[in-house]
Length: 300
Ligand SMILES: Nc1nc2c(ncn2[C@@H]2O[C@H](COP(=O)(O)OP(=O)(O)OP(=O)(O)O)[C@@H](O)[C@H]2O)c(=O)[nH]1
Image: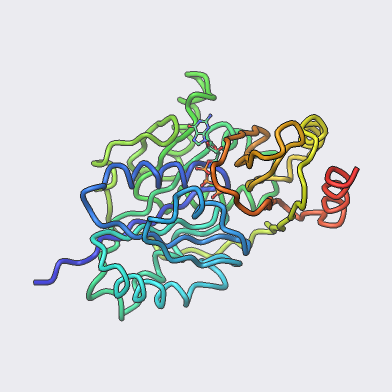
């Protein structure tokens, strides 16, 4: 009998640690042939550049696979099979995707003869989840549904939580999903076995339509780092995620990978000369105001 390709779906809210987990899974499975289906809301895929050119990968850009690109999943999975003949496929969803919709897309009749959906893994940004009351009701519902329909929940960023917060967060996750395996992690460091936890998924769900949007800003030159930090400090809670590449005037030759999630910025030097673009994701983005602010950073 033909061995089926194992398929894993990684879901979880914006900036919760999906790409970090994906990197760890690729390290754990170096002896296997793993291919990725990466989905991004915008046209510019920062994560594929983080993972490197050598990783077998197809991309679904500029939309969310659980909404407008759902039918493309089937096509992409056929393509991945023919192109790479992998043992394992990992789908990294956008941070606003509903996992059950992706799960459904992977159960298309033309796929079931060669694909076995193993597990839906949902990453949770612990501190952000505990403070989810600051977001709109649809965003909160989305965060909760990503947990409700997972086989495995990874409660991530425990380094940013007290012991009491961890307990409270775990209890809240458990209330939403009594059957899931829960693992508490720092930088999504997990043991491989936790993914063995699979099973049926309840399909009786209505799809939450979130009001989350994205935009891309392209820089043509380096910016002042102090003014950039001042700009970050005044951003409202509704800016949920920023990622991309930037240069600062203090060291204008150096490309920097910039990440911002739940108010926390991270900067990492990047060796390649990648396009200087930032992807901004948020609840009802005031795009013209953000464009103005970023133009001012760049041109003054
Ligand atoms: N302090 C801390 N930071 C973390 C942890 N895990 C991930 N991060 C950081 O959080 C940011 C987001 O991580 P990603 O893995 O890119 O998150 P993601 O879910 O793929 O993000 P999107 O694809 O944009 O939704 C990055 O700056 C990571 O380095 C953790 O356990 N602790």
